[in-house]
Image 1: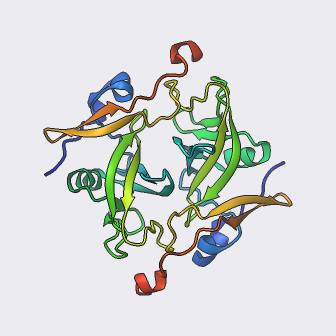
Image 2: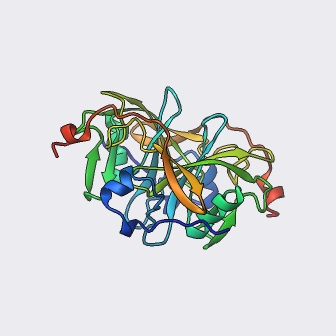
Length: 150
Length: 150
């Protein structure tokens, strides 16, 4: 089943911000930004992108799909790693160019290709005016060299 | 004080993903994506963008700055609305092209220009194969017509 999305060009500014039609504003590359959050904890897992096909497939199958910019192709999350994300809810932001994707993780619960639960595993610290990164303590839940056959 | 950021072109893939230098990967428009989260609750408030100046100012002043794509200018969050965001922590993702910005809100605690706490105030529901939006129940904490003098 393909899901019908509204073309935002058909809608007023008011309708985009306050209306009841889902009219994702894809950018000039046909993408919207997706923030993926673990529904049960609220933890931000990753940031990725969806094109219309990925968004429609996510809504119709209940399994989260993205569009991989680096590989330039549709990407069913977990197709290689097994870390499938089950869709719980999608929320749109005010101007409908960003999505909040609430998911239930499966497998080992690692959203990041490095094997960690979240991609945000380092925090910024300033040392002598220079910005450094320090681990937040996220452990690897899988070995990426084994999972991705490197 | 200007904060020294590392040029990611100087770093290996491994150093970007696992190293201790903060080397934000600005896109072809000079921007990185920022996900803003309320530090005390973990609530995702908004998605915005930062250029190098906004990021450096955020780190040096402790007040969150973005780059407004629609207005094509540096944007100190809260400069009009009073809804200033105090920086708690910035985390970088694996490939350093997305940031998680943990903040303490001030004012009425409304990150969205519509007056709501979060920009993500509607969820997607499918009705007869068409995607609609339903309010999640976020109330307006200010009247945007008064705050922005429309």
